[in-house]
Image 1 (cartoon, one colour):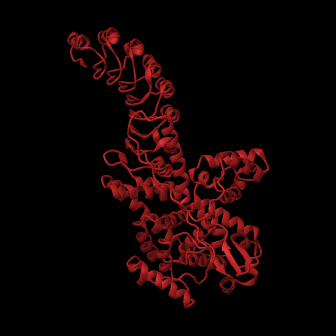
Image 2 (cartoon, helix red, strand yellow; image 1 turned 180 degrees about the vertical axis):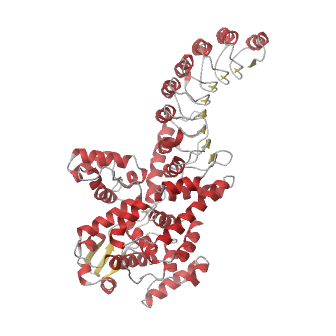
Image 3 (cartoon, rainbow, N blue to C red; image 1 turned 135 degrees about the vertical axis):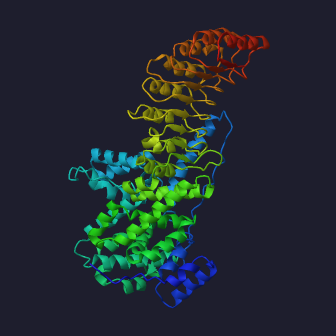
Length: 607
């Protein structure tokens, strides 16, 4: 099916898109006054700079407030209150990040998890179906955060229903991306209006044009005349339009408003995708790529998401075949951006850009593209000297990219503030890395369960695991101890600057005696250890056939611990070094410990 494109492109304007914002505003006003159609470039320039949309010509604009980022707390010994604050911040980030796509929608009613579950139960009526659907939502950060808004919750439920019924084919996979979700929602709406719309593509393009005109005018509301000029009478009265656009008859006259802002933004992107030539579209994508505005991120997310095989398959029922050349050009662009980002990980700006690119890659759900784009990279370092802060959605993008790459040996996420939520998103790929650096990430005992899951994978490759300066306690130590008894690859475990204390140290070091434990180096410095656990640590270390180095610096050991540590050094023939510096030994005690190393060759004792 072919149709003359409704969306026009003036390539001569592309080069000057960002030169003068004021001039663009004047151009928009002039176009409105002269009843001209808004061209593509004008639409994009305005969407990238638009504030919250105006509901009606004389309505008061509502501006969403921004939650200020909390400063990163690098001090050891963070209080319980601070931990709670961190969890609240993390949850807020998750909601804000997903809602950046849907920033302007009404967010008056926020649903708690319990309220969301109740909503699902009432929507599906069947308890089992509701449970399966909500469990799927919980596993996907994009969908879960959306459901905090009752309006989006309705869209999610309506789009997921088919996938959790007996009628659904077993190989059908429910949506995990926002583009896929809205593609289903749009096509379901078409099906409910079956027979009322004759030319689906022509009608859809007119609706897409209206959507981006609204974005250009910073509004989601249109007067009755504008809609009547664009749509035929039977189209205005169709069930489809009634679900997408709400008609309001007030004293000021009849107006039509997009019910959901995300649907309007999605339709605008669909129109550009279908009716814009590949060359002009790539130029506009390049313009957007360097921008940090939420509207640019929204546009690119939907545009690359439409390249997804599953989204295109759904939409093509009503649009005809998607433009193949456009898809090829966009995926090639995405692949080149991933590769450039990986090659320039030392450049902070490139590193941040790569994170965004990986999120777009996730939106495509193209496994072959991810495998080719990541290539044979051996190291990814988002942490380190100049770390970047990773949100849960960033972690989801990283996990998707690495899921189809089998060469990454070193994943450095030090000081990236991933928290428990971010680690959960990375779980599918943690076991594939030989060196896993998770230092200073505010990980709690909840994360230790996730790490155990990675360590107990049958094909786990982790040799070095660094968890320096997190929030792990004796509970986390117990979890890790269970993994050490089963894991066959881990050789270096760094737990410095945590809160294991005596009970945690006992539980962890007890695993060293297990024949299956392969630990060679164990670092427990700065964990609040005292004389009460010294004998247990020494006995467990003596029973290890693999232990070569033990770090117990900066704890609270006194001369009462000298005897067990001396016994350890003399008995454990495999031990090459032990660190006991910055404890509470007397000068006499330090001499005793220092003299022990003279009894064995190639043994080092630091006190």
